[in-house]
Image 1 (tube, rainbow over the protein chains, first blue to last red):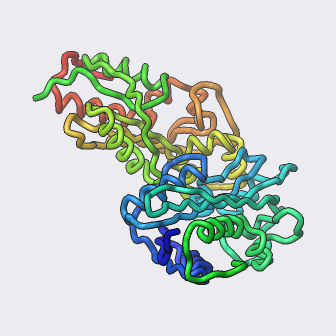
Image 2: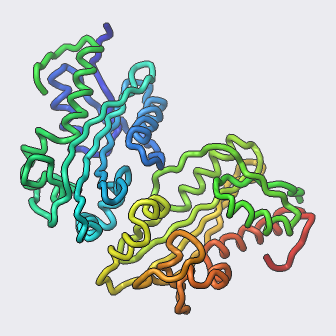
Image 3: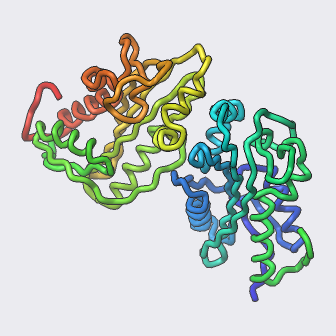
Length: 197
Length: 197
């Protein structure tokens, strides 16, 4: 079994970087920001976008590296805004999405997160997390970011932005991270060992 | 001056292919479909997306090749749907865009087209065409495709879909094509010669 001491994370999001530092630090793995520019492929599959990014990042970093991508997929809008969630957030935002959903009965939506990890040989593995839920009728709450104020996870009456603790427990990102950590623990000799992340 | 007899066009749109065959045929240039897969970079600039595609297509075809990209940029929506126009068309469509514009006074919008041409040395040049206009209050007309039923070019009272002849005269694509043709006539020895396209 190989020893894993360090991982590169290809992101420009410092919030996510500290989060991974905390989680993976418990496994004895240091996380460094991979300061490389990678292209985002236009594809409607989150998995494809993340896989290509991880592959490109590995070609530049030549060390184990991972990327994370997420998106909100609304059933009644044929999956919109999907992989283009961050662009849609920047342009029409939550207000735009609520407007598109005015009078729409089927409010089902799903948040998805994908972590793509390129190992020391450049082989890419993908870890996906999903959180089913629905689009609220109005914005509620001020925590979190992005579409959090209008997304209600299934089985709960609050939006992600109203209850960040709930979000951290049931979120798509949480599930993807759990799968990733479980893979790392199975595949590598780690200095740290935690029973729960 | 170099002779130009043949160009590759990287597209999957057969309608556009025949259009270019007709226009460039008059200059004595044959147009073949470049049957290569190129990635679409996620970028908010049409120019960047097209340039990268032309570069990638040239790497595969190794012959002069061009690509064409277009998008609708709505002022009040911060440029949305922009480079993601075809995805937005497929998901929320004209009805979605009209819904987003309900009650919005500033209806200014602009159609942009970019042709990126990689010459025999792989050097990429970009030709841009713009058509200013506004978003209609409702869909009108059945000609054309995409956002044509809701786009009214400035100075006219009809949508592109109501008057295809008008569209062909004033459109963004038309302007980009004119610039491209004028460049080809200046830069190459062509068998055919037409005064107007």
